[in-house]
Image (cartoon, rainbow, N blue to C red; front, side, top):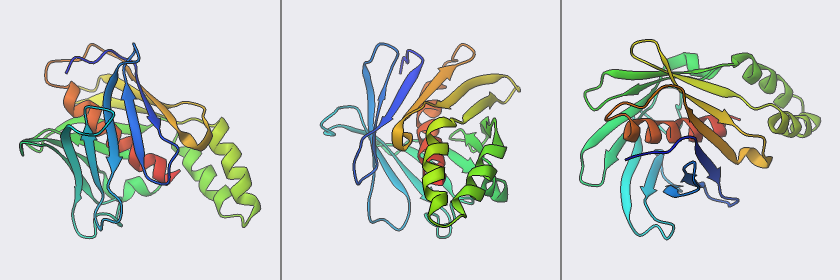
Length: 204
């Protein structure tokens, strides 16, 4: 991979979860589709718009992985079976704020992901708890308030940032590069952050 940042992730308006990844020039990088009616979360990644050429799959592992989102490890695998790495939720911490480790194929932590404004999720949770009116207010809150997530490498350096861009139904996200991408990082970072966005978008 030779990614030209920033990358834009746009969700398709559909009953099913499907998104497109494009680079700074607008070139298509990937099409991602979440498998429906599956006990465990499963995501397929394609290199073309017609979804004829699959490159990767991502699947949750763990007891009742699709339901216990805060405990599941989502493993990224190429179609030849080679493991790229995994996105690992940091246990109960993820119940109130995003906290994930991005692991390499050896299981070692390569990056750590944190929500830059965890208090926003708390406020939205309180709003959602209000019957009827809360749903309307929450929709406006979701449009005007756009969280960011910082990705820090093993050395403690901020390497990437994920931003939700203002859009209806949380349709658009951006991944920006904060330091030069190193050899071997791009595949793991791109696919791991796609998983992050899928999970955090579901959480609201």
